Each structure stands twice: as structure tokens, then as C-alpha cells.
Length: 294
Length: 105
Figure 1: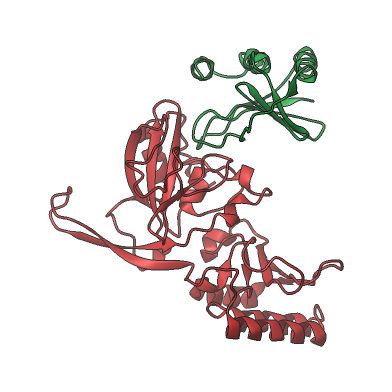
Figure 2 (figure 1 turned 90 degrees about the vertical axis):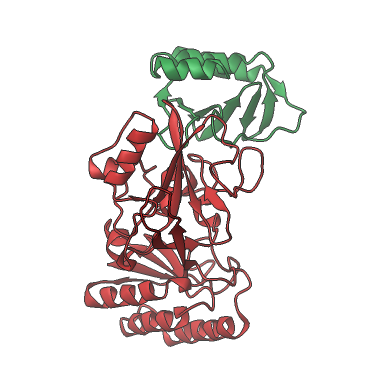
């Protein structure tokens, strides 16, 4: 079940509607097939007027079940099948009298404008792209492994909203799962550790379902984000995630997500980036759709 | 209630505890005697130690070395007295290893 909010008004309340059952399942499947159409809550036009639809999970298994964020925006850009999906949702809302014809027509006009002109407030690139990466022979394998991964566009706004920034840490960011629980590796799987060394935090993350790099996930586990783990031995851990633009993003605790290191340089390689006391590089991992995280 | 958070970690949660009434009185008394900081100070957001965050009555105060960030502005604590008060208050709540690391900052 999810809640839809048509984000259009400034003073009066925005129309809201609950979608459940088979209709919710079908819509979410369609949204899942067109993930370029969705964005973070801070994405898109934020001024007066139509700002898209906000979809919010009502159940805590939403993200696991559907491979979608617990809250996201759709129909705020001309990307993918957003317009089609929004119009379908509004059709249901109109039948249930949650919106009237005036609002539906207004939103349709705005969607047409976005499709024709393109929304300049969001990047004109897909949210995520599938890539291959190849393990060369001699890197611990008898034959080359070729794995498919996904790289997402750098979107710090999704993480830096003051309402969510303090409640999501490096593990949330690198896994690309905004749980608002300051997630700990292994906690969702009964394998949390308080020994902050590479083998311990690695095992905790593997218990959550991550794979070591080049232990490929099938396409059914997409999105498969590429993550890197570093340790301040006995003290703490930190994670990075590879972004579509080629650099790595990260989020030190409750601070802002960023793509720069301690020296202010873009993180091109987490192994060599300035990391303060986080001196041990533990390795690379893949997140997966069925990753448990809390 | 005056809550303190030691903001030092990236992955693991930051330790938090509540000041005793005497500790809170000492903290705010010292804070009240500090003067504005004329230097261009940035709220620390790097990996590693980022100071203590004190929260009370919807006020949030960050103490980082000689600089104290409040909603009303930045004040200077050249003797790091506020930091020492908070470090002393941490002893009952934070492990020896963490305390030793913060004392070296």
C-alpha cells in the first residue's frame, strides 16, 4: 500500500490518496520498470505550482518488496514513463473523487510541458545505468569474471534534506537505502558487530546479503550498486558508492552526502582518497535488491 | 534536559548522554561568558572528530575545539573550557578508548 500526494498547492492541502491491493502492485511494478522516471523528494521544481506526485510507502517492507525507495517523487520531469504513470494514478484518484477534473487537467498540461520542453531542474541523464565490470585474470580468479552492476547519478539532495540527513549514515548512502535508522551492517540480519576491523564489518555486511566484488549478482538483484569499505581500526567504518559520473559519493555519519574527500578533492578512487584515520581499505562489494538493511 | 552527542563517527552511532543538572549549569554559565568569534569558522563535517553537539530547549550548540556554533552565531572559546566540561561529562558514558582518542584532538 502507498500514499500518493499530488504536490501542487502552496496554501491549501495537497490532494492525497491511498492505493492498495492489486492496483498498488501493478503500479509499483510499472514504476519499477521505469525507474528513470522517479527521483528524490528534493528533486525537480520546488517553486509554486505543479511539483509532481510524492509516493510514500505505508508498509516497512515496501523497499524490499519493490526495489523502490520508501518515498520518492514521480511526474516531476519528462523522464521515462512518468507522465503515463501519473495520469493513470490521477484517473484512479478522480474515480474516488480525491481529485476533480480541474486538477487532473492542470496536471496533464504540466506533464505535456515537461515532455516537450524537458525539466531543466533535473539532470538530463538516467537515474541509473547498467554497466559491466571485468575481473582480470590473476586477480584471484582462474578465469575472468564479468559482472553487471548499476551506477546511479549523484543525487546529494536526496540525502541532505535536514529532515533525513541526521538519520542516515555512510552505510545507508552506499547501499542507496534511506531507512532513517542510521543503519548498521549486519543489524538487519542478527549479525551486527562492534569490532571495527575489516573482517568483522565485512562479515556483517555479507550477512546482510552483500557480495564481494566479482561474485556477481543476477539481473533479478538489480540495482547492484558498487560499494567500498574502509576502516579506522578499532574505531569506526566508512562506505563509499560508485556514481554514474565516474566518481564516488559518500556520507560521513549524519553529515552531508558529498563526492569530495578530506582535502576537498573529488573521490576518483576510494583506495587513494584522503580519509583521515580510516586507513584500512577492506575491499569492494555489491549491494543488491534483496539486501537486508536496518 | 540537556543532551550531548559526541559527533565523531561515520558508520557506528555517535554516543549520546544527558548532562547532570550541575554539569548543565556549568556548561551554560561558561557559554554565557564567551565572546563572538570574528574568524570565518566553518561547521566541521569531515570524517573523524566533529565536536560535541549539545541540545536543550530546541537550542543546538556545537563545540569544536576553540569554536562554538550557536543559532545566534559563533563564539570563541580559546581555552577550550566548554570542550573540557563536555569531555569530563563523557567519562561516565563513553569507553576509555574513545575518550583517549578525543583527548588527543
